[in-house]
Amino acid sequence: DSYADHLEVDVLIVGAGFGGVYLLHKLRDEYGMKVKVVEAGKDLGGIWHWNCYPGARVDSTVPVYELSIEKLWKNWNWTEKYPGYAELRAYFDFVDQQLDIKKDVAFDSKVVRAQFDKPSQRWVVKMEDGRTAYSRFFICATGFAAKRYFPDWPGLEKFKGIMHHSSFWPNEGVDVTGKKVAVIGTGCTGIQIVQETAKIAASVTVFQRTPNIALPMQQEKLNKDAQEAQKKDYPELYRYRLRTPKGHAMEPADRNTFDDTPEQREAFFEQLWQKGGFSFVASAYKDLALNEKANDEAYQFWANKTRARITDPVKRDLLAPLQKLHPLGAKRPSLEQDFYEVIDRPENELVDAKKTPIVEVTAKGIKTADGKEREFDVIALATGFDSLTGGLKDMGLKDVNGVDLSEKWKNGTYSYLGMTLSGFPNLFYVYGPQGPTALSNGPSCIELQADWIIDAITKMRKEGISSIEPTMASEQEWHDKVEMLSKNTLFHNTDSWYMGANIPGKPREQLNYPGGLPQYTRECRKALDNGFEGFVTA
Ligand code: NA7
Image (cartoon, rainbow, N blue to C red):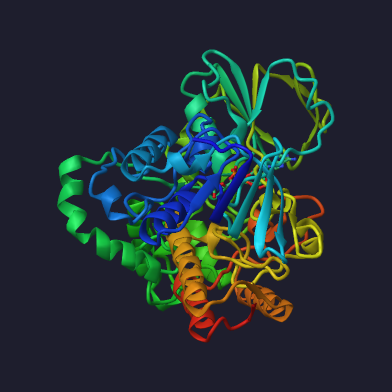
């Protein structure tokens, strides 16, 4: 369903991923509001709509990674502990079947301008094709990876083969059978593409600038009966996940690294390793992200395990150097299945893109700083995103005086509670900058924030408040709080997209709230309980 020229609703939501779907369902079906979602893409799913590159898969485990809506979990079972994109898309189809979501989503609707009109107390939102929507509340559920990052290599347009950014991979796929494939980037995406394409490609060449301290996924098949038997515990699981720092339903150990003897440490690391996935960071010693020496211990364990899997000595030193280059967990660790074995194979090449950076894309392939040109049939750009702020800055969001959000955030990001913006009355966003976002399990963070937004809206209605917006002072305070919390961690001095460090010229600052979900929840609740503390109400 789409809409014609004029649309007037209580709440307009941008984005039809987990955030948009959850908010639409709750506000429409439980609170009786008139709600519409506008979505730039052609289907539901958000990140799972855009990402269909080979091997695209979630790094959180189900059922922690799903919506807590009873009608959904009662009637849905997964086939794998870490589902791939196709299964996640099927989940969104199922969500639509159960909750009748699509009838209130306008697809192919890209927002290019939005501003709150004070006299009429409503948002005026323009789509790329000229349509306009009006709403009392405006919620951006656009995710943290809406804006792709393409390095500005000369010649990007000259390549004669097939080249795609990971999140623009064609839906029908690219047949890499017997092809020479290049993968640029070794973030989570790059590693997934390498593992998958290497199964059928003639060769895969990986351009690595920084090694990923990738952790073993320990994928498992799931069966229906076992899931059904667990379902009585799901409601508690969904509550519990919000009480854990990262929303993964995993808690750090109650002790520090050096409280244990070396033998105890080895045994503890081994136990986390066997559990797999984010256990190695989320259930780790509580000083893992705080103390460099403690982090070294975890790194050494990782390096020993990983080096043992790589026979080529040059690749071994590049992929898993004995000397730690950045703290384990302070850049987003990928979850891998057989990445190290795959890249170790002689037909696959590992290029040290730190020593010999990519300088040009040519008609035939990629040229590096040593003058070498390698030829490829397919190039996968797994070069990441202008994360967290990029998408929001690109939507033409104007404050009440017409100043664009990109101007407001030119020298740094200012929000209150990582959900509201001064100068933008009745605007909310979920899973964006200065919330727990990229340091947390998506559905946990999204539901927590969405529930807060719903409470704020219902409280306004009850109290006859027409609009709220945070003060600039509360934004400054929030910014300082996020920085202060970050400075105590090893995240702060590590170059990563969490810190805005992956985009040339982007201000360097912590873009995620690093205090964990329980503390974040308390902060947000306090603002509501104290009568919209930090906001101006009208
Ligand atoms: P990431 O994690 O930002 O990874 C991008 C990768 O691309 C990373 O390895 C970069 O190296 C590399 N990169 C970027 N520019 C260049 C140039 N110019 N030359 C060589 N290599 C380059 O993006 P992903 O898509 O993997 O993951 C994004 C998140 O989405 C993921 O973490 C999940 O949370 C979901 P660098 O490390 O900067 O040296």
